[in-house]
Image (tube, rainbow, N blue to C red; front, side, top):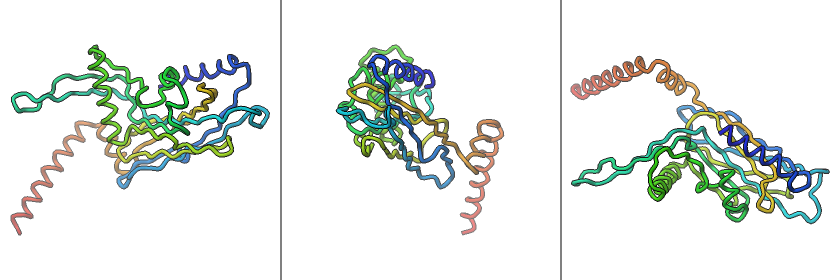
Length: 257
């Protein structure tokens, strides 16, 4: 993810030279830089806001209004997709596809539908939209098979609330201030997230900025997660012992009633 962001920044630095003019800059921020997950966590409402700073302190005369696109991404992960097939009345695993770097969370909000803002090439470069994600498939399946698995992966993530598209969710005031809200679901994975903001005019990305967001477990949930990661064998023994003890206690209570 860091390499991709670096490539995009290099393209942005070259854009003003190609256009022969100074480009505006973005000053973004987020309502929460740290989100802690506890037992009562039901999700979070993340506010992304900021300002567009134009050279000279004002919008150039006759310039078209710009669009804002905000993308929030979670850490990438390896994903194995399996396809079920019914054989002799039994559902079994058939074909499978593995993805090396699928984002664990992806949400995009824009001032207009993304298809009206940029072309397909720009969408692919900056991964703007669910159909433009670079999931890095590992398998060498036929293109139609790979496309079917990719659609299945995106659909599963979308139904879980982990992949979201929100066109017209960005509000721009006086062509200077912007804001957008993105919902972080309760099932969100932990890790370092990035919030990328893009300023787009006439189909070109003319400015971008990135802010980091840390989502981590806290309290008892963090203790359990760290125990399972650091001392997996001890965690497993305690979990099994606890299950056996609770089962015996439930049976004892049932016999007394």
